[in-house]
Structure formats: C-alpha cells, structure tokens
Length: 361
Ligand SMILES: Nc1ncnc2c1ncn2[C@@H]1O[C@H](COP(=O)(O)OP(=O)(O)O)[C@@H](O)[C@H]1O
Ligand SMILES: [Mg+2]
Picture 1: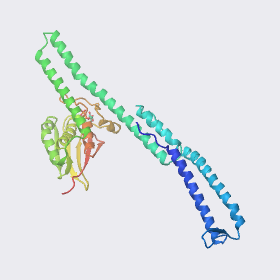
Picture 2 (picture 1 turned 180 degrees about the horizontal axis):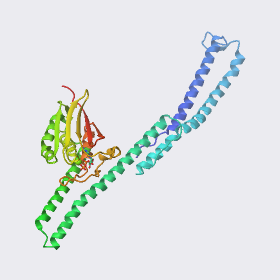
Picture 3 (picture 1 turned 90 degrees about the vertical axis):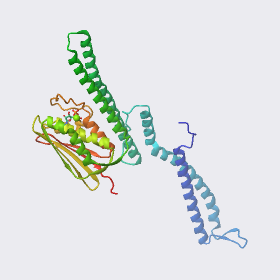
Picture 4 (picture 1 turned 180 degrees about the vertical axis):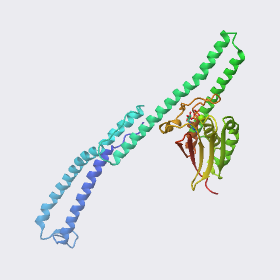
C-alpha cells in the first residue's frame, strides 16, 4: 500500500542505541567532573571563570581523552546497534515474507520460527495457527460446496430421467410418475431450505429476543407428536423455565431437528425420546435423549458435519438431507452455546445444548 517511506526500525533502533550510549557516557563524564570539583582539582575564581586547582596537568590531559571517548562511544554505539538490531529483527523478515506469501493466496506456507519462546516466536506461532485454521476453514467450505452441489444434482437428475421416461414411453402410468416427481421436488426444496437456513445461522444475521427454551421445546414436541406416534416412539418432555436470548425461530428449528432425529433414528418399534430443559447459574440446558441402534463413539464427531449420515436403513418417509445436526451446530454457535453428543452404550444418543442464560431483570 502506498504509504510514504519512513526510517527503518533497524535504523531507529541503531540511533537509539548510540544515543543512549552517548548519554550514558556524557553522564559518566559529568560524574567524573563533579568528583573532580569535590576533590578541589577544579574550582571557579571570583569572576566565575574555571581555574585549575592542584591537579591542572591531570585535567589538561583528561579533556581530549573525554572527547575521544565520546567519539568512540558514538562509533561503537552506531556499529553495535546496527549489528544487534539486525540480529534482533531477523525473524521479522521471515514473518513478513510469510505474510506476503499468505496474502498471495498460499495458505499452506508456515513460518515455523525455530528457537525458544519469545515475542517474535509467539507472533510467528500465532500466525501459523491462524493460517492452519484458515486453511482448514477453506477446505471445509470447498468440501461443503462440492457436497451441496452433489446433493442438489441428485434430485434434479432423477427428475430429468422421470421426465424422459414420461415423454418416451406413453404406456407409463403418469400418475405414478407425477407422484415420484413431486417427492423428488419436495426433497430438493427441503434441501435448499436447509442450506439457506444453515447460511442464515452461520451469518448470525437474526434479531435476538427473550426466549423460554422450555416453551420452544414444548411447541416442537407438539408438532412432532404425530410423527412419534407413527414411528411407535413415546415422546416425553418436561422442564423448568429456561430463559435465554436468541432467535425464537432458529431455536425452534434447533429443537425440532434434535427431536426429529431422536424419533427417526430410533428403534423400529417401542422406542423412547426424552426431552428436558433445566437452568444452571449462568446457562440453560436442553437435552434430547433417545433409544436406538448403538452409535460408534468414533463416528459421533462426524455426525455434525454437513451431509454426514448414519449407515442405518433409511426410513421411507424420512430420507434426511444430512444437514439436521449441522444446522443445530450452527444455530448453537450463533447463540454462543455448546453442543455435546454422547452415545448411549445400549444404543441411541444423548444430545445436550447449553446456551447462555438471559440476564435476570
Ligand atoms: N438422536 C439420534 N440418535 C441416533 N443417531 C442419530 C441421532 N441424531 C443423528 N443421528 C445420526 O447422525 C446422522 C446425521 O444426522 P442429521 O445431520 O440430522 O442428518 P439426517 O437426519 O438427515 O440423516 C444421522 O444420519 C444419524 O445416523
Ligand atoms: Mg436429521
């Protein structure tokens, strides 16, 4: 960027070193002068002019020595300062180079400054950490875009082949094809809406208001009760008043996604879902627990990734788009909360969302 050129830090440090050395030298000489006056080797006469005392020859000899000393200090300070500051600032050049490389778009470069911990190493390490995070974030975004495109292509490709069949083979049952088309179309709409929701939660562009999480959970439970009955799952919800601050719509979405998962990823029959809310000193907690097939603990961290689905059979009426938990994670983050998934050894999952409690009035 076009800034006017200034003195380099190395030059400034050099001048400061030399300046301080000269100052220290001058003070030392002044101290020697005061000492000499005290000793009576120098004194003023009645007119205020300097007059040599008994040590006249010593003073005469000392003055040029002092001048030479100051000159030596100046040269020594400039030279020493230049070399020392050059050595001290060397890591900075490496950091600047790395910054430029990163600015050109290469995020894989690292500074990896050797040596023990000091301010420059701290800066370099922090910079390396930032680069690593940016790189991981970018890779995640690219993976997400690729997955989203792939997921969106599937219903479109199915629609295309259905349309092809309808046109080329008039003997086909058009009603059946229309039904299939409608299903596929609905799925594409669901997917797009989930994607929009995800980006909305990630952008954190929503208005925040007081929300009672237990009421939100109650509303979600009421809506999902027919689905639970259809799956032969008993749904139980209880809870304290849990005031928090956030978007009621997004929190309802979060609760609905969790309960929906708990219902559909459950035992084929006779499963259970337990929803509860309670309050802690500074936070409010929502847990959704369900029975079901055992979930491998090593798979748990991947479940919140977009488009990661379990391997279990897909219910005919619920072919999830695989964004449910990713949306829950984004909404939780956007509300400054934490999401924890713990698999139950006997099967099923216990999902906990902890959000900051609303400040008491
Ligand atoms: N409550 C749950 N119990 C068991 N497995 C679950 C539960 N919630 C999510 N899962 C697993 O996590 C995967 C990802 O969930 P999600 O992101 O909601 O995608 P989807 O439900 O569309 O498959 C699911 O496919 C399922 O295997
Ligand atoms: Mg789901």
